[in-house]
Image (cartoon, rainbow, N blue to C red; front, top):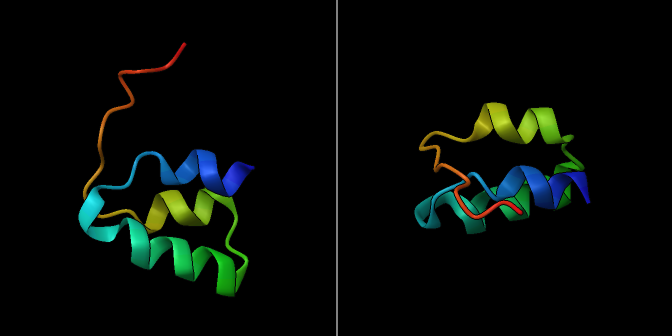
Length: 46
């Protein structure tokens, strides 16, 4: 679940690649956040 939450900040152009890398390398949420190059704001939180 932490991986999915971290991926919400990734842009469309890098989401697929980061998702595959997160799954194959079992990245933590912090590692995913570090790997994101183009951050998107999460303006839809509840």
